Image (cartoon, rainbow, N blue to C red; front, side, top):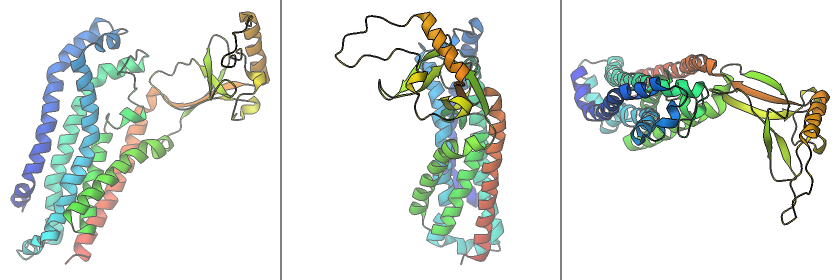
Length: 349
């Protein structure tokens, strides 16, 4: 049974494993040079790395590969795993040879799932290892150009840590479950690809921020820390832009709060300490407020209770979010796995 499963799936398994191996080999071969550049000068490491096209390409290739692995595993390994046999009717032949339904599905999942998790785990470990000096520099506030995203950011989080393995496992069992329900290979592949992509979008946009408690900071407004205004034109100002030590963080909200912590839809004119820009076509103002006047204005609105309210996950929350998201995905995978075995035992002929 194990040999039969391997023969049926070896082409797709070997193709994906070979592609992952190419990425892994390139990362392993180039990592010593990356570490030499990092050791030379930490603070300017990423500035110099911007000029190395090959390192930029490998950095992006590692991220893209780990985002593509789950849909590929779910759509092209998981969905056809059972749907192909159900569609052709070959499952009945196996069941008449003394192989139980449970064993039939278990062996298929063990061979395919073991390969999928092994490939994903190796790729995730090597990508994290290769990218570690870049991630560390970004978390320390030395971001530059394409190397500007902290590893906790929604764009990068699913390509770091242990989460990629959990996404791969979920994609595989989701594909199997869809194949068991639809019993047709091509529709199962299409629906699985859509569902896996949906999970990859929904998790960072709607779910992840609720897996842990973010840090809420209330920062006084001063002329030194305020960099400018955020708004929708010269007459509609939403909030101040404040310089804060948030390197390596995932910022959920950054807005000016009014007295008592009230959320402001827009900043009142009385709280705007910057000069109003002239109307289009009008001459520039002949006088501008002095620095002392602006400092006095900021002191006044601070005394009135205006603050910059920042809600963010700091870099130290990375592993907390990683393990909790992994647990959520793993729990969902177990539920789908249970459904798949129930479906095979009770509802298939």
